View 1 (tube, one colour):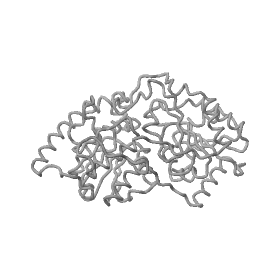
View 2: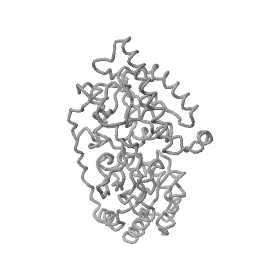
View 3: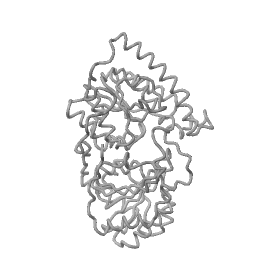
View 4: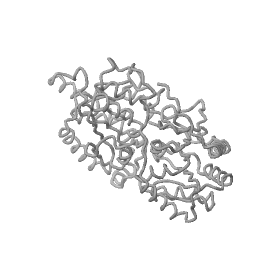
Length: 434
């Protein structure tokens, strides 16, 4: 599912399918993905019969992780990858979309030479990369593949193409829908009631032979969910500070408050209104004269961010969208006092630093997607209808008013930020109950 959505901005596909939208992509995923998975499942059973079936226990010597489109998941899965590496000495590999590979560079758990990049530029380029991927997997002698995606039929097919005898991934078991055939031959029941970090650990536990069936019965210790921290060099911090002075020449060491007001176009329902962000920013600048607000974002988000800055209309609020390179984000987070953000990648990237982060949730839930670094605090109304998007509905919602997120009062958010800036006490690590 995710792979089709990544085509939406591509000029070639747009010219080929001019009326393509997310609903059309969902139809393609169902109409093309389901029969393909069915046919591949039959082929896999025939091949398995002649080669003697899957191993009694997965051979994790060369393990490949598959996660294409969720940059934040590359951070959340890191404790699971390190566990596999530490306990069984697995040689780690990863396949990801080219535009998202920077998320793996933050912690560098997977060696660069063991990362395969897929380019979703258009269907022809994608097909070529899949062919290259097949050869790369044979060269790397991939023995086990772990699919981190939530029921993506495309990634299931990549698992098959990898040639690995053991293919670990999420299964719906007795739940309706989400058909991927039997390509995933080491299934793990996806549990929507525990954090994704716990689900990822469950996949790794299955790869290590700790479960006899698809139910992940091995307890997950809180210590297994710890995230390694990154301490940027002083030179990296100096470069970031010079860039801040380039957009705010009067900066003289005032506290840096980061506002990330955007979220992925794939799920715009996660965005708290910019007008609300602007109100909170104006109030915080009035309450804290010793602080500046740096609005962050990608180059393509500059206009969206500028609208927020224009509404704040204060000399101590500046637009940095497109200013910082991806590898400069961690140094930026390390010199900043706090960040407020929608539920998006930056919340997880910042988790490798001590930065205090306030994350606004609406149609999704912090129980599954809270950053695991220990310094995050969720802002979440938890309405009876929340969360309304999930793996089971391909993150589709028909709610347009979004009271789960638009109903979050600015006064409450301002109070949370103000209290933190006054006390500046590090919040305790959130408890994740497996």
